[in-house]
Every structure is written in structure tokens, then in C-alpha cells.
Length: 400
Image 1 (cartoon, rainbow, N blue to C red):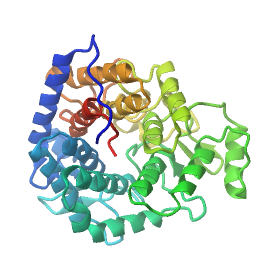
Image 2 (cartoon, rainbow, N blue to C red):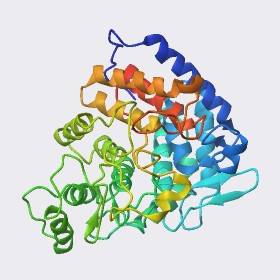
Image 3 (cartoon, rainbow, N blue to C red):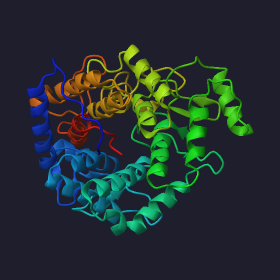
Image 4 (cartoon, rainbow, N blue to C red):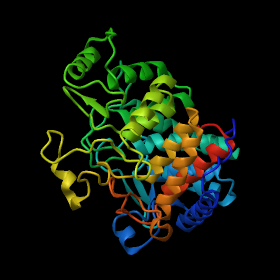
């Protein structure tokens, strides 16, 4: 991770950022086990809700920041988590949603839960590069199995992954078919591992998830899907959250759009428009950033009964418009990549302020309008992404 470093501009609370760095390291150490980092600090509630486990996506996302932290013990914990997930890999190559090594339990959510495998591959590549280790060689067989499992989920012409409803990180949101978030990660995996058909994945993603241009695609079936969208929705600077046969997502998936820009699916011009749309709509306030710009409302066609479970996914809560500080870390990195450096530092400071709420609780998610902490305390990936975003600003470059 090398490139142009960005000094802290005047007006930024340097002591707050330094305290957040120190407390992030402390939290990740507290949440680390010999088998890797848990999703959250072990408490009775965290254990009952399975957060005191090594999650595929959480441990992998944390690994990006832990490997870049400069702390040898955190880099080793990142490595341990990737090894643990490999140990519990399914025979078909899928990486588990979570693992509880102390009791030998592994969970795969429902059929086709897709992003744990994607994030594991991304983290495997980056931790190996950051630490100068031999993880890629040590886990060569597991890596190939994981790639093959993903290839089995890929449309063989469009080169986009297909998935069931609620089968990625937003596991109580009604996204299905071709999902933006998952396919942004898929394109990144293809780039990192020099896989075939990466260009097709990028081209079809741009045509399908942002079908507002005048160009007609040569493939009849993808042209049909795009036709449904183009004639029934308002043009937007954001990519659609998903596209299925005759229905799609217009809620403004901020995480998916940010990753689409960072992965290189969107070019610089389109990435800038994505950021401008988020800022214009206030998606970064009161803290960076909301999961979606326009939450789904009860009674809408897209609403699902399961979103009411525990009253968790009501508007401006959880995946449906709640604020997730770790997504804010990716947003900070994108701002810096696009040259919005001062704004990147400002958002990093706001990310630190979100983590500092309730005496540095590092709460999982906050209410999207009020900023009230409402999730699980001691969330590891908030700390990991603060360290990664700060490192990208201090040292320059991208996390991959």
C-alpha cells in the first residue's frame, strides 16, 4: 500500500484520530483469539447472537486493516482467522458465514450465501502481499476450491454472479438475482487473481446495474432486463442495488456503490458522480455512512415480512438505512482516491466520533437519522476499517 501520503489538514482533530487509532488496536486485540478475530467483543448477548465467532466476511474485512496496522500481533491474528475459515471450508469450496472453533460449529446461512467466500479471497491476497508471507501457497488448494465454487454461481455469458434473496452481508434485505455488492467484489477477485473474463464482468455490470445510456447491448437477454429498468425508473447517478427478472433495487445501496467504485467497475467519472450523489443526499450524516440512501418502507412492493423481525430492519435501521461506521471507512478511502482529500480527513474524524459514542463503544450500527447507537458493542470491523482508512490517508494508495 504505497502512494501519495496526505498530511492532516488544519481543523482536523488530530488527538481524537490518534486516540481512535489506539483504541481500535486495543479493541482488535481484545477481540482476537488464537483462531482469529471475533465479530464483536464476547458478552452474554454477543454469544447468544453468534457475534462471538469468527465470521467469514467480518474476519476478512478486519484482516485488511489488521495487516495494514503495522502491529505484528494483529497481522498474525488476521492470518489466523483466514486459516481457521479455510479449515472449515465446505467440500464444494464455500467459505462459512461463521465458525465457532471451540465447539467445531460452522454455519453457511441459507443456500448461496456468497460474500464470505469473496471477502476471504480478497483478504487472502492482500494479507499475503502486506505481510510478505506464504498464505497463498499454503492455502493454494483451498483458494482454488473457493474460486471454483464462485465460478459455479456465475452466469456463463454475462460473467456476473447470481444469488438468492438475502444471501450476502445485507441478509435481511430483498436483493436477489444479480446483486451489485457481490459483483463488485467478484470483479475485484478476478482482478487480483488474474482470472478470465474480468472485462466481461465489468462491462455487463455497467450495462445491467446502470442501464441509463443509449447504447443497446448485443446480448438479447441482458438487453431485455435493462429495457424493463430503463423504461420504469428514474435515471440516477447511483448503480441499482440488484437486478432480477422485471424487478430491481432503487434504494441507493451506498456500500455496493462505494465498492463498485473502489473495485474499478466504475470509472473515475462515474465514481465521482456516485460520491456526489451520496453527499447531495446527505448519506454521510450524521455519521458516515448510511447503508442505503432511501430506506424501504412497510407497504412497498419490495418490503418483506422478515424485515420486521425484532423490529430490526425498519426504515433507517440496520441494513435498511442504518449507519455503519465500517462502511464509512471504505467511503473515506474512495474520497481520497478521487482527490477529495480534505473531505476524506473530515469523514475519518466523523467516523472516529461515531466509534467514540458511549465511551468508545465501537457500536455496530447507528440510527440513520438520529445517530443513536443501536447495534452490538465492540464491533471489530469498525476498528479494522478505521485503521485501514487512516493508513490509506497517511501512506497513500488503495487497500488492494
